[in-house]
Image 1 (tube, rainbow over the protein chains, first blue to last red):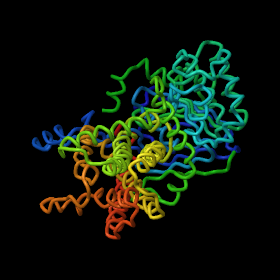
Image 2: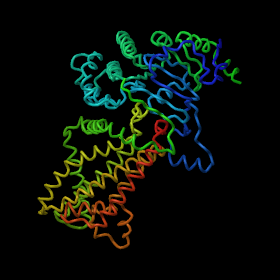
Image 3: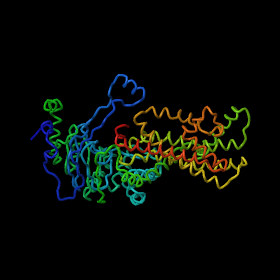
Image 4: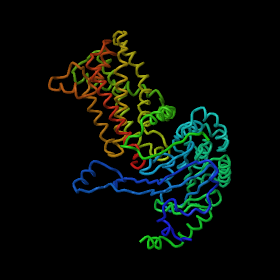
Length: 281
Length: 276
């Protein structure tokens, strides 16, 4: 049993250790084939003419390639809740954005069955000057719903967010950050997505709301929805997920039962980066 | 399960498949309308006069330029001249607000671009839409000034629809072009207001098309707004059919801008998320 990813990172995607994958009888939800995502990042944070001229004068190249995701392949079936863990910069968010169609693959192929809803950041598309009610419409449209679908779900969304009486008709500027996050979360989980991508957003609201969010996520799973959950909270992963992925430097190094993957990841964290670097070298 | 299957593969030669892209764009039109509505509704919140500023801004601007040109000309230039300035300025400010606003539309929507999949072309187009909505009430003011100046109303004024549609197209093209350019060169945003100011002076707005001195004759051909504003002014102020060369030249510029803008945006769209 490998204790550090260095020894398994050389495995090809199809050889990644699979401890226990959810029922293969369920219909396919997401298929990722040999996904590579490479950014050509400018080293200049704010590209301006002056910097371009200076750089050309010195004959420097400022474009650097960052291989954020390298050769990831996986099949995920309906009803699975996939936890995604890994250090900062492991490619977790890039993978989520690729599944959502935000970042196209540099190489490889992604096949997504059904509508994807993202909860990668809270309140995307919201305008704080608008009321909660108007933001539900705006957020829903941003996520790809029609006006009719939003109207049909409005009451449920408002009820779930549990804002104090009258707040849905006040500008969101007047909301506390917790209230803002609750409404944003409520919109995202009521989009009836087939596939929900969640990035570190479960830390929303107070303890009771967190509990409610958990229940809602479990409910989504029971209705044959597929969820990808990126989290640094390892206990969240073991409690909520049926399957876990561990990404390291853009590679899928391990996939399987959440407790096994989390245990392996913890062992890696204990050994630390130095050991990992040695092994790579 | 909705049954839809999406497949994401690397873009070929920079451009996405156009038919699905346009279908997706059309499917998301309500989002663009809602963004535009939001922008208009929230823009003047907190001001005493509220939405009245939509009309007051262009009106005050017209009087500023009328006063300026009257002083420079050394005397009063008559109400018909005021009508000419007003008609041209309203159209020009529609154009410049669309382009300047459009140029920052993607950059300023970073969170949306990073976290939601949608055709980014919606953002600059939504800004153009906002400005079309703002432009419409100014036509009412113009009608009042037109009547007060003793100018007649006639059926040939309907020709104005043609240059207006062409200016909308031209503005949409440039909005997409500069929105893309701004992601690569942030200076674009800083240069644009000055470019627009010079563009205003080089267009037949504060002066009449026939006043162009021979030495500056090239602006007729090199300034896309010369035929576009000229044709607009002919139809709206003079109630005459605009010359065919103006409509043809304007249409050529508008189409060229649309193609260039759409190409720039579509071919670079995949990079936007990492350029913000």
